[in-house]
Image (cartoon, rainbow, N blue to C red; front, side, top):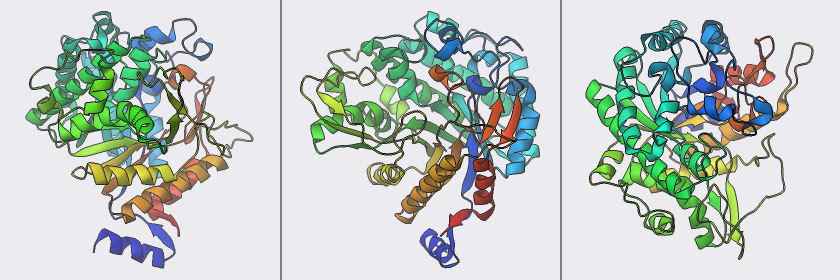
Length: 460
């Protein structure tokens, strides 16, 4: 039976059914949940340094303890299993494996992920690994971080070490999470670690992150990895003026999609960035490595952007070279992050990816929302999150009906956690965390999502 026939049959039965084998799950990241920042031989990361720098993170919060998942992973996995999660995407802390970003593997760090993976398999949950979710070892940043080509080489070595220990139990290997955030929030705008404000450095970092992906892809393949993926944060950029649209679309979307899926940088992005860099960091053979085939593209979607020409407008620091481009705040509902809630943007994004980059299957590796959740009477009633997820699941279903090869949906995030520069102020979790007691309470949205997973669909 074809996917379209499957969906039609589901609609007739009163259920908006997803294809057989569709993967439902959730996701987190190491620095946001693990804690144990000084245990098991772990070295400092750039987020340890950044979060301890006055004024960088809300109320001086750090990931020192976070959700204490390092010690509570077994009970956390049991909660996932109780909710029926089919997959769990987690990241490995690079400084837990290589405290200084190079040299031999720290066996105690690998032991933790060994135990976590076995715990997941023991509960029938598929582990999906992300090798880099922003926690670069501080020693590597001291030597230039992602502006230094050597960091890409070190990343490939680290990827091989992790695969050597876990490769027999993990099928899907994600190299990077959201390299745009690492490069442009971290090196251009200074809003994320390492907190630098140099647009030229951001373009170098973007290239070396992609080179790290390419090198790791090659080494993982040689080591026998079954599937390799990269996760990008992508968004439709809307507007009637194509020149204005091209600026943020180029720096957010195409600067990563084109090298990975076409083996080339977009010409307009290269030209626009020449005021910041001469691109001399791109060497012969780099783009062939970066553009080597992948098995899946991870898509993180939160909201679209609306832009218009606005002469005299200063550049948005997260989009170097965006002078004269105005970002429009449309009226309508928003999350606690102030982000517009526009589920149709997800359909638009997925359909455009199918049109422009048709060869690669897609996996939604992050989508979710922060709201001002309150624990009252042992319960968190988060109807707005349920409505948000319901609308976005329907948007994903519409994309599948339009022919998009979408393989699964991982909700961000499993539990409330350290939300980077926002500290513990923003709550994205399906599970509420009382940070003082470390008590976990599944929210109403978690129970609702559990039913979606059980039915593999929604009411039609």
